[in-house]
Length: 316
Picture 1 (cartoon, rainbow, N blue to C red):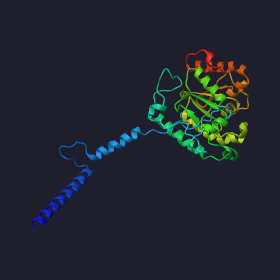
Picture 2: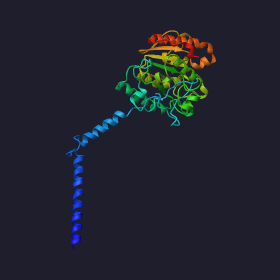
Picture 3: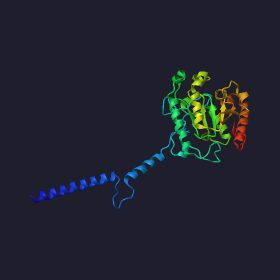
Picture 4: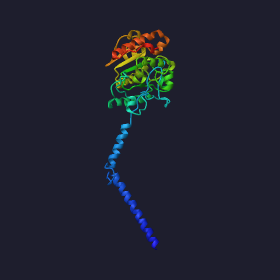
């Protein structure tokens, strides 16, 4: 009998402790402090944790920027896309681990970058990503939509001073999801590096976001279908300079029928942006003697930007 009383008392004590703990937890959830504990209410701590989590979250940008895919051309027509998708645009800009990974800062070693990033600049990566998602779902050009492996948006620095504007994706880009990755793309990289930059300092994109079958030239209606996309890209990027490489991008951007030979050697305007026209790297592969003209054009660009002109030995 005595033992049962002891057990009953123990049960009551245990139940009392449980009730007390539950009440304490309820008070803590309501933001009431415990004596001897931190003076920061739990509710405030939760807000701080939420803010901290938001501050570390970064938008998608090009891988770069595949923030976004680039319509760059390794061969005149190459399609970048996200290797993780079967027919989608790769983000021209990749997932960032910090805001400084893809958003440029002022740095004399990277003269193609603009000023130190701001919150508005960080928003560019998000806008580019949203636009790339819209491009991924585009089926306006039925033939291209049915034959592509993935769409090509743009890649590189989302806050560029210079954008290289190409024609359309080719087989390598369509397969790898990276702009300008074929032989012509490798030559473009050498041209960029000869100017003293890295590919990640500039932004690369094409007129078309899908590869034309057999690398044929883009049709006029295909250019017009993609026009809202590349015009919106330029609106988001706001570059100081655009370098049109080849006839298709030059004629599409400037809305002219003139050939590259007549357009190069002088400055053009696209809104507030200065436009320079030069030959496409694939043309240089077929006509190596024209490389000197491209280097002349790059020197004009560098001088206009107020940058020193490196030796031209790298642009070979």
